[in-house]
Image (cartoon, rainbow over all chains, first blue to last red; front, side, top):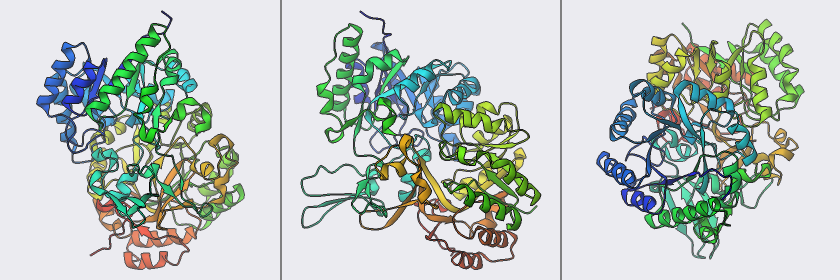
Length: 335
Length: 301
């Protein structure tokens, strides 16, 4: 045994089947959203109807897992009712917490459902102690999901200055832009990440192969990347594409390479830094993926708590193109 | 009441002398109502200009302009946090908040909300107005339909609404500096290479299409937003101010052209024609306003 506090493992549930898989694999909490623009993973074939949410809540409850509901996009003027309905349905379903980003939505929950536990979504982009204290003071936020831009040392410093719990991403896709502050998808597709909950919509993605078997990936009207024969082509996301500048006439990853976040080797540091909950990204991933990743993290956290060195090699096989990064968490050289 | 014409904060890292001369010329020659000062993009750049604010503010005020200080948009490390608290403490200053940490410091004080704080709907606007916000510059990705609703709400609340009508649009912020990265450096060791790009570093796609512009940690549109066509309708609906984002072109002329369109002295077509002669090195866009791909230009039918 050791002096670490057992962290909560927060796992993605894009579908009812993934929810059950995550719970069965040892998730302490699962997070999900409704089938509309009220959450930041608004993809076709994903998410929950109100009935499915109720069934999910019951399933999770029976197995001792919490259910967190993401209502973390930003309602544009004139469309607030959809977000209001999502909140009401979530509260009436008895979800353990609602994850919010918009101040209007947070204010609505606080006013209409004063007892409802609130978490601050990563989409709110609260990256300093003052910003987090602001949300805690105004909306009684109980937990903040930190942006993926801070080092472990900075997380520790924030922990000592805020009155709420910290949830940090440990595994999965890593967008390069500050969450809740990116309109790149809207810029090329007319669909907004903040307002519609969509990043790089599949309907506007195109793969084109030329006679030499070079593959071009496009989003909307723009080429995001070009892969030589045999290269592993990634899904076109603007912040992971290759571009040219005046000084760099060979295509280069101007923002970031197609890599996944994997903080498994930093888990003990994160736990010591005061992180209450470890979050796995991936509501858009398959049930099998969720099962493997959650299972591996369950074992890793249990190993650490028992003072055993965790085995994590299998997680590497699940990262994007087998390339992984510790992102900002590992140190300032990443920036 | 006529719509105000305002100059947003300079987003780029210009040499101190160039920046000071720019503001002096604006003070003396530009027909604008409010000038926003402050380093919004990168805390590392801020110290270069900090000792100039007093003089620049005086010159602008003497020129009949109102001055507002605009806070850093992404606040993360201790230096960023100190920068925001120092700016907020500036004696007698009116502050435009660009993140929630500024809002924390502004508790109980009248202030403005900048475009980097997400205010997309009536509820957020009303809540912030209740906390002392009296003027909102909206996120540029909002479609005109939402802008018009918010303008109406703002009139009910008695607050101002501002919309960016000129300049490259901020599309994203990051913790990483992409200017430094393009030169195989990191943010801590950037050597202020962003100074080489007075309007941003242009990014093209691999097939040579103009796409984006990098400004340190910020990613901007390649085309400049130009909402001359949309201004009359917005003004009619209660948008109380238009924002011009400064670029390395003849900004006094840009101010005059937008002022002309705003007052009805120039038609939008005449204004657009005039802009094409002001030395702007990119095309125009207005897609966000029309609810389509932001990079697009939608001609008035």
